[in-house]
Length: 196
Image (cartoon, rainbow, N blue to C red):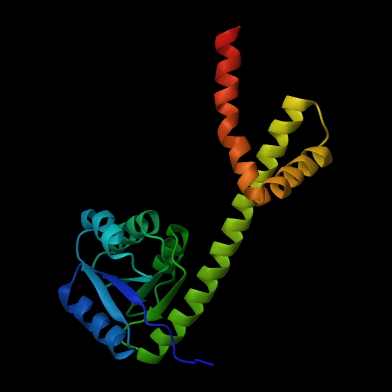
């Protein structure tokens, strides 16, 4: 069994190069790779698309608004959890950052604290991703059932049985069949309107 921690690609963002270097030293000491260092919010989309970081760390050294803008942009653009690196307890900032989407915060310069925080965040983010995927899957299946119910005048149970039957008959998953139904539905509705 391999107990080695995963090797991660980490994006670090702050408005201060010195602070970025300090965070990078901690990340490197933990055996991770600093995939990108960002100062400017406008670079986030391009850098996250290119580098695909596993986790992002936003430092709060200067203005809160800059750090909050960095957090918002990373949460919107990257498919990774965000951690805030902060010098002192600042409940107001942490509350604002939490509303923008951070998963945790860590005291600046604490290597052991950073290691623990990264472990916790990756576990929480994995669970978040699983739940998000499950909700999305359920929503697609429910939408497909609704389409079949409307189109064929059948019950919800019968619609699900139809999805399951088609999945078995085509050696596909219920989700795959449901996606096909939801994707084809607008095409058939448009055709019906055109023929009227």
